[in-house]
Length: 233
Length: 160
Image (cartoon, rainbow over all chains, first blue to last red; front, side):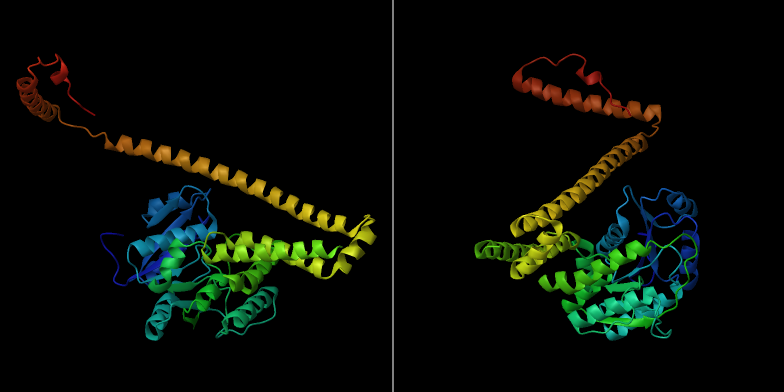
């Protein structure tokens, strides 16, 4: 990646934990729809053949010897992007949910409006219903509205673009996990945020991390973090 | 509950909150870890402001005094915390071990990569040059100190 850097100073960071079934199609999608961007797979200590598959195909991959979780893998990618002087970094799922064709639109939006954060939002074109997931999304959106005064339609979307102005915090500091509470904290810190309508795939393989018990925990943590902890911060 | 105990509980909780908030501002503590302490302080403040809650709890549980109920709540909360911390420390220990092992393996691999094949003649050449350098330096040292060169030192040739 060092030698032939792509035309645009944007890095697509793909944290991957046991994504052997999908990682190929994700990279193919990126190569097909936006060859002008660099991408970096961060293998988060996978126990399956994710790393081997990446090596075989010659993908750009960074290997973490220990499983750190999504936050650690993403921060490793962010650190790389910051060190290599990228202007923008996109958080991109390795399970095929996110579509690369929307990344250029996000970059345009960030450039035109000088946004620090751009979120790929599912609920600008599609209507938000009342499934459990969407109720959770509404609740977190409401918490962010109370604390920051800004309305974010899809706070739980995992497809976010960060500009260099917030990159340093994300790359170096504690408590900047790639989660909605970080967006809230950055907004409170004076960052600007925009949303771009995107569509997302249904999950191709494997089960969601957010089981019933986990999503309760996640919701509780997010709400207290946004409402209480960030108020103390 | 006596007024003094209530005041102590409230002020201790307030101090905890202020301290946590300062640590958060300096980014020295993880937000996940602060939630426990904030909730803990909130419960203590709640119980001291409304001692009726603790009274009720004591009655239903059949505990002799209200204070004991408060202590029980604190003990349970701390036990829970210790339990979770034990799990966390085991995980961290395991991770550090894996990290060190991985580092050692990588270093070993790097060493293996460094060993390259060198054409024998060229090595001889290099050895000779080294010998020449060595003898020059030794002569100079000899001239300075007047000592004889140690035998066999210049014969050593370093090869991978």
